[in-house]
Length: 240
Image 1: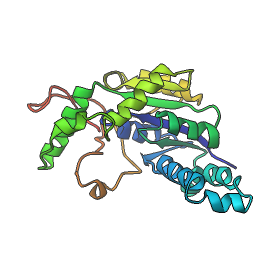
Image 2: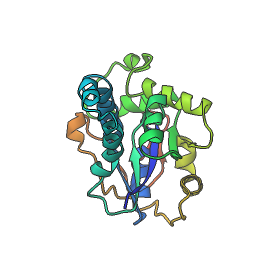
Image 3: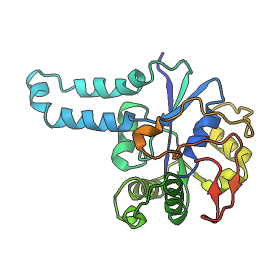
Image 4: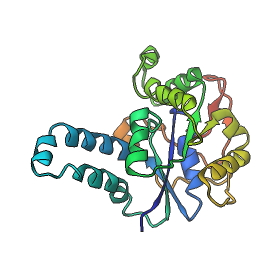
């Protein structure tokens, strides 16, 4: 039986890791790390429509593109036993990626989009890198169309302008201040039965290997949801 796929997208440093850890408390939901599914689907679509197209056309197998792309999510999550999977990719909201979902995964996607003021996001990146002993040029993060901030922001803006009920926007400050209401909104949007979540003993069961990213603490989840004040930042999340 094919899994029920839902989606999480939006801006970085908005609580996406801790939200996944909370949702993953539900025994019927798998919510894990940032997923490569979107990128793999995009790359394979490009191959089918460009470098491999001549061979597919000559073999009269251009239909293979749809068969292959629609199978990628199931293959990637073949180890998952939960019936519902929340695939997390910050740029599912870009129109080309959104169309991949509608064409190959589900015609009625439900996507939770996490948002936060850009100034706070970039300040948060600066703080995490500073604690890791890394200095970054934050001015580069403001360049239009660049990852991880501005490209994601392009997707958020497109989703706001083209929302026909597929997108639910969750503001970071609202999530931190009132997680109970936030989770009620998310479950209603996902059309799932509500679940009683624990915000005081949060454990990330599917952590990212931060050595791959090269910055420790970028996806750290603290056991209790909340905000903290410090000398470096006006407000910094207890969880990434």
